[in-house]
Image (cartoon, rainbow, N blue to C red; front, side):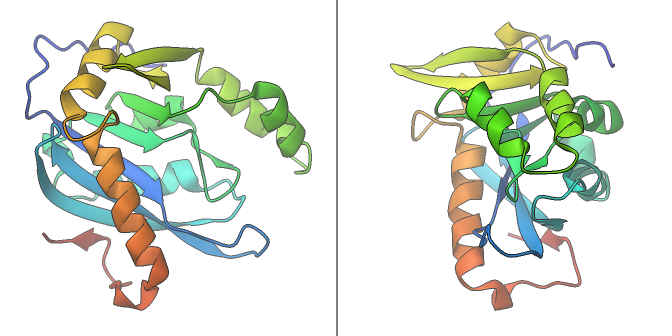
Length: 207
């Protein structure tokens, strides 16, 4: 487990990668596109990247690491944000491994506090549910972050609560939610509706 990344100052233009998954049919097997958008704080969109993961698979962490480290934006990134700790159903992101292999803090955010008993009950439908649950446990306690009058909930790995809270607040410019994740969600929804528009031979999208 890596030590915390120390921020001397949280700048308004801190480079943040926000990641969300495209829409998919949870009752089918197959692959789902993950879209990452690079933001300077909550102000400007600098670029985007993509990868694909298996529905209910175990490949999300490795795929995200590969996507991030192969990106031309990697050296400028300071934080990774994900929309919850799971993508493509129950393909669970190992936040500790993602932090360790990218050397970047990771903040997995949800708008509502996850119900642990409901999550565990759903995981029991998978043969390796105990391993998946262990990954969630290793992500640590869920922290509550306030953005204006709104409560958000986050697993924080690789940064102090105070730094993570400030990063979330700095990047929540147009809504009570970090702009990198809000835009990643909007773009992922659009790409999911028309996947033929995506260039499947390249994981980087220029903007």
